[in-house]
Length: 325
Image (cartoon, rainbow, N blue to C red; front, top):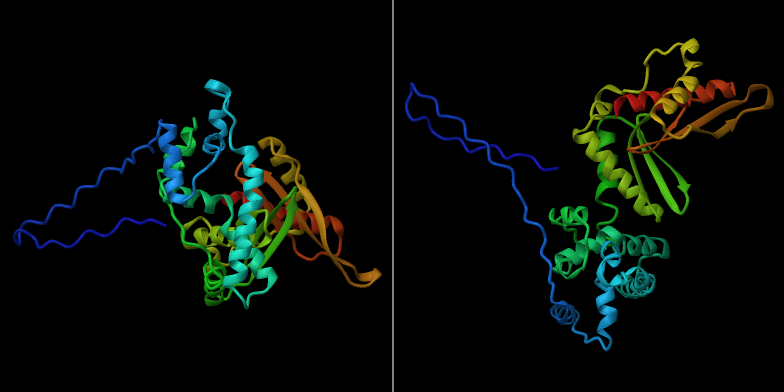
């Protein structure tokens, strides 16, 4: 998180005159990324970087064409079909590299390492770092804006993949006596992970790989706990002891459904997560999933002796969370 540095202290001009405050700096305007119109020069730059000469440069030109440009002049093909082959080749190359350089790491951790290093965001950063982006034919101002932020990451290693956000979150919560729970589910081919601290939803993340989804959710939780709207969770235990009466609790499911209808969100999904106890003394725990414009959220209700109360408890947690957004 970027913060403005404190100005250096200057001695006053005299005892009677206070030094004037420093002028605010103007916002930084980053120039848009360039474009190499000479395609022969673009191909030559790639060959110099890779130290490899392409026999068919038309394939290289196709690989340097974004889908936003492909429908333009000449009907040029984009890199999407080549990406299908490239993903497999890159996966094999990284599998070989990680297998040889991590002789004591097991297959599960190797899979997580591979997924972290061949993710779309990671590869995009590598392309920008090696100045490949100006070689890309495109017509996408939004992508240009993202590239001008120049956010680079080092390669993810076996020594750093676990120590970054997860252990930091655990240490932070242990310091404040808060418990942490990770809840995950599948949406299509994507794994979605929510992070609960003290029973309150504070972070969410998604990826095709479970390990990466958990890392993304943890990073989101840390950013909100350090400076976002959920900062008070660590100190006040928001989400517990709110004094909601049972009569009011029984209206929470209806209130949540009404809110989703008003906001034109999909209908909330209620799911039985846990059922315990003998037949005469069963207890139930329900989760509630709501999809908004800002993401997909999941809350876990309290243990209740009736299904309806368990559903309403999950809905209550979701309503509390939506109020904080």
